[in-house]
Image (cartoon, rainbow over the protein chains, first blue to last red):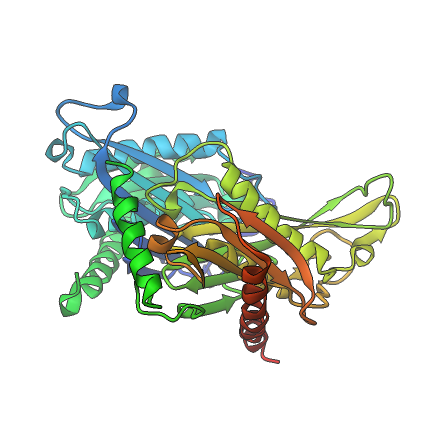
Length: 242
Length: 261
């Protein structure tokens, strides 16, 4: 996390710089099935973040050594478009995107019923077109809507959401300034129906009480996002298409 | 097994061509529906989204401040590159840039560069010290045929909406990038023995060589490229060149309408 306290992130009236309350999320829009060539896909706009996810498969796993006899493997690629941030990002994989891809894949393997597809591979492609803090969470949300859109059986939808700390106050869903100058960031992937957690990262400084409050915010927000995800999937399959 | 489907598809495409028909019922020179949207991304200094049939492309423009090349101290630079990420379709795999994506980026780059729509000297900030580098990045989200034309359209539309971020780099106030013209690409693919405009994914799968033509505002040629295996006659080229002229006029109108002039 960046500098401590030299940048003002909370207004005198207690609201945040963009006018949100402490426990208020940025607005979210989701659309399922936007890529005609993919088996499943989703578009998620969360604040100024835009993520698109596509699912290809299940398909035969190549090369053979990555095959598992009793389940499928999930191959996730998280990538930021060169024009997604204020300074251009050089195209190609970097250490950050590799790590995010790996832990996202492991989170998705925990919710997909992988035993249903032995020796197969499911490809999940996450492209971040616009980035304003919290892209890994938006990517997770997009990926799980895309998996559901592809008809892959899952134990629950996985919802990506983050809380953090700015000026010693725990806040939900950090925006870019808060992410850059705040004191902590706690992105998680939540299964809203079972109350389990499949994705967890954190950096910065949180006391045990602050952690519990941040988690409480995350769970509350996950339930809200879950409704928007379900609504997107319902809209996609209304009217008997597909 | 691998060759079987294309063989059957090729037979079907040849039969259709004989009857003057296409797989999806279009005329020989008819395009699919095209929707162009600009200023659709928050961090691109210019951006565009093209939905061309089922092909979906995003393009974004970024500016970098750099030192000029020693032999051209008064000129900035323009670079256009395309990424064919694995999200674009089942056949795309991760890895270093494929020859196909390099060709795609370079053909689009040439059309824009050679049209002279950007005055490189206008990109100079301090001669010999500081110039703007303009980067157009093309991101293919869905390749369902005729990616080249869709990419070229997205690239020029994004460039034409670009704002030079001078404030962020502490060199004055932001201003709109001056783009003097609108180079447009029209591509033709041989399907069932004859050329068609705007091939679908199936037509590309069962088709042969392709020809890319980029034309400027006055109908002048700015870039040509032949790709894939196959040969053509001057007569065939003359025919598609005529079609390209009218298709480019239509596509240029699409860009102008988006800009509201």
